[in-house]
Amino acid sequence: MRLTFILLLIAVSSVFGQTQKSRAALEAEKKENLERIEQVKKILGQTQKEKRSSLSQAQALQRQIENQEKKISLAQQDFDLIQREMAENLATQDTLRVELATLQKEYTEIIVREGKNSRKLTKLGFLFSSTSVTELFMRYKYLKQYAENRKGKFEKMKNLTEALKKRQAELAQGKVRQANVIKQVSEDKKGLDDMKGKQDQIVKELTSKEGQLKTELKKQQDALRQLNSVISVAIARERAARKAEEEAKAREAARKKAEERARLEAERKEAARLKAEAEKSSGKTVTEAPAPKPEPAPRKEEVREPAAPTRTEVATVATGKFSAARNKLSWPANGFISSKFGVRDHAVLKGIKVDNHGVDIRTAPGAEVRSVFEGVVLDISAIPGLNYVVAVQHGDYYTVYANLATVAVRVNQKVTGREIIGTVAEKDGVPEINFQVWHNFTKLNPELWLGSK
Image 1 (cartoon, rainbow, N blue to C red):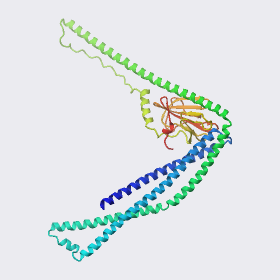
Image 2: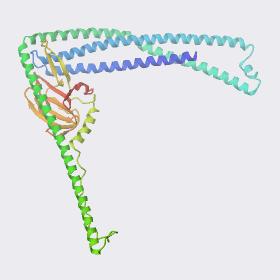
Image 3: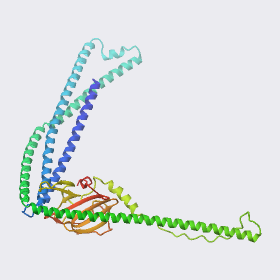
Image 4: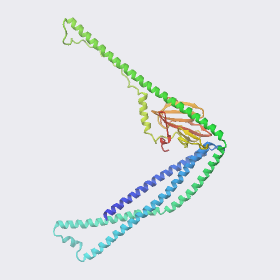
């Protein structure tokens, strides 16, 4: 009985722990997805100035469709979780009822047995029929422990049953919640169908402008290639400067070492000359050191400041800091990702792939663009199709901010995390930046580096 009770407590605790963990994770994910939906709605409301269909509209609708599909999926998970929670609690209650019934039966048997025995021997009689003080003490301890154990187990069962009844009372509203979920999913699916219909209409209109879209795509690809070249050259230039600085430092160290060797050699020769003069003046070979002459005044050592860290030393520290910030970087601008990293199908043109070296972030008109991490401005360039581009160095890592209307920093300027580096420019009639993360010459997926908002 005791082992069964302990196992039951463990099982109930495990069930509650897993359920609560699943519920907390689900609610957090639902909240995050709703925030993304509202973010897209807000940005679209601020940027939909033109009635004409555009590729940016199609991309934004695609993001919102994905968010809506995620919302429906999470609602279904919520529905399933409610069912599982109720089933788990019902099963646990059934088990407790059986255990409680068993306990009550045992108590009934005890009462009946004690009623029969009371005619023969009372508890006091049981105690004082002991043959020694030790036996009397042991019998008293047995009766006390027996009573406390029974009472304790009964109280635990009672308390646990009450807790589960309370929990079950809360989950009794599960059916109402499930009905609300079903209603919400139905509305969300209708909204999703409307979005898909609107997207199909935009795609249909844009397909008729295939030639224009291909021309625009070529311009964008040319701009991205130029961006890639500019950043690669800037990185190569910085690495060359870093190497030159290290080589210069090595040459300086070698020069100082050679000077030190020459000084020691000169001192050795001077000591030998002084010894020879002493031998000549005495007419014999000097076996002992000559009387010491007054030593020249010690050279005044030049007080030097500690050597400034080299580019390589600074880069090593910065690289470690940035690497540790994976999944924690602040966003360069408030908004949503309208185009993801990597090679993907074109939003309209069939059979056409586009390669995004970063992510496109749709934001509000005139929005501030900020550095995602502390660093040094490596390069500022103007590229047709991408307006101003700023690259910030973080050791062997680099962040790139393209399509800026204005720039608020200068080359070699140190910037802190969240420092304003410029404002967003418009692309295809909407405010949008292209944000990239490089490790040396390798482009990384920025989504894996950006933290939650």
